[in-house]
Image 1 (cartoon, rainbow, N blue to C red):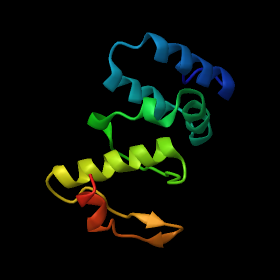
Image 2 (cartoon, rainbow, N blue to C red):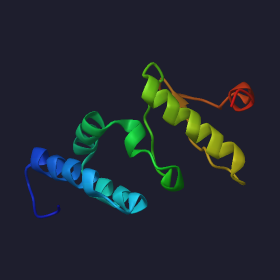
Image 3 (cartoon, rainbow, N blue to C red):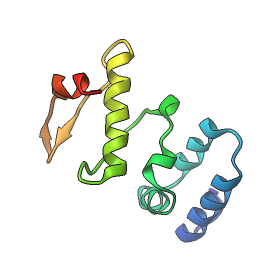
Length: 109
């Protein structure tokens, strides 16, 4: 993917590869090669839930909680942050303000 220069072509290759992927956990490595614009195009094409892998739920997430699929991913991230030991959800913000995940969100899972 790094030798290709056209963003739409890079995204199209990822879409085609998604239909043929065998190692779901390694697919995330393709996403890391894409620019943020290309990642958004890929999420729009395949869907944020389809691209979410709970075993590789690391990194930065910017989610729109008014969207059902993105709200599901947020729910999964909150759940994983609760069941895994240690500090798992740092630097959370909501509308560009610091945000602590309410305990009620964890109890509702």
